Structures are given as structure tokens and as C-alpha cells.
View (spheres, rainbow, N blue to C red):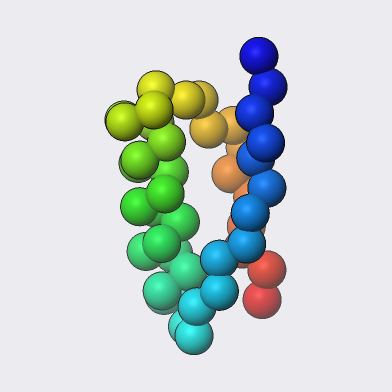
Length: 44
């Protein structure tokens, strides 16, 4: 099964990007039991 997996997150700082990314990844793996493959680096 495949899921729609693209979305944009806008933040003001790179540190905020890292925090939000970690939070989203935790939610997907712990709550939804999804496998997160090959996490991409955030742009800019």
C-alpha cells in the first residue's frame, strides 16, 4: 500500500525545521505505525 507522502512545512529557522521534522516522524511511526524511509534533508 502506498500513501500520499509529500507536504510542505514552513518555518522561520533551520532549528525549527529539525524540531518539526522530528515531531512529524515520531507521529507517523508511533501513532500511525507507518515506516518512514530515507528521510530527505530539508530544503534551505
